[in-house]
Length: 472
Image (cartoon, rainbow, N blue to C red):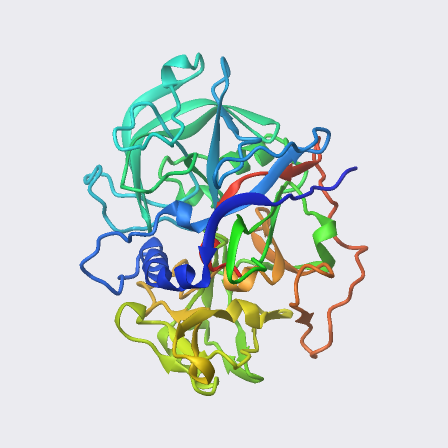
């Protein structure tokens, strides 16, 4: 069986200065996405578009060779196919996280829920720009529209439209009568660069359409032999400037054993929580060799491949950076972030109740934010997201994004609901993992999941909602 492969994709040029300048917008996008208040209260949405947070993934049947064919930032094969006769093809964002619960004035009387739904911009979209490919519903012989108005909000904007059904194909798999949102309006800059929508990878409990997500439908209809999907996230090597967007590999229905070593450590979702977005309990964070214990009330975390940074509770953030010599809390539009001397190496790690996973110092250093020469200060990858939003078993206090996830191979398991991490294969990362005794994890792969236990071995080309411009 051929294993999935990944090829580099052409992307927009970016610099460290660009990435650092966009950090305030990214922080506010994360806060809005999970319902926290933005630092700049005057803005109802941030100015960062979804395509500022795009990561490129390869998805194609192993029997079909990859032929380089890319637009400015988003690859064009193989797209999602909507409608049976004739098929229409679209590039979508994959989102494991959560949409915002803040209101947005598209359909004000219809509040949003979460991000496990599939939506595509249609030819009825009055706000979509000319570079957004649109779904022509009248050309689909299998399209059904029930006219129910629905709206979904994100940290970067909102999409609104009508509940509908159609035949949907993705990476060689087809679901008939899949529920989706036919989008008729989006906020400014939500989509661009040949993106046409989003496929949510959360659980059905987050569905605004009150339906089974596409990925869960494939598993429930026995189209996948394993209820998991895995992510490897690349790190951008050239920190000065790059015309190549960082990418990775998304594997559906199994894992790619060439991308990790040893076993995958699965930890079930915390007791008392309901599968919605992907939850874990942060047990310990260590920085500069000093452990910070996390209480159960402050440890619930959403594991979100669609978030660039690590957002932590205020008290934990303060403790974390107090252990880094010379660190300073930032103010103004950077409020919530900390800077530290660029010459300092920030050694950090996290544990969710099992292994301790190291975070590369390259991921904790987002780039220079002030100073010159030996007085240069750099922005840190862990920021203060604020106080916990409300109470209850499913309310996360942490948002764990790509600053951490670039250091592990991450696997999301539907049954039983769990998140798993494994140490990256040699040459993919400088990160490491240790067990509770501080010893390196075993590299025995005999218990590792099969490479792609599907009817067709896949490697995926898709775009993921992630921190493109600060993924170093």
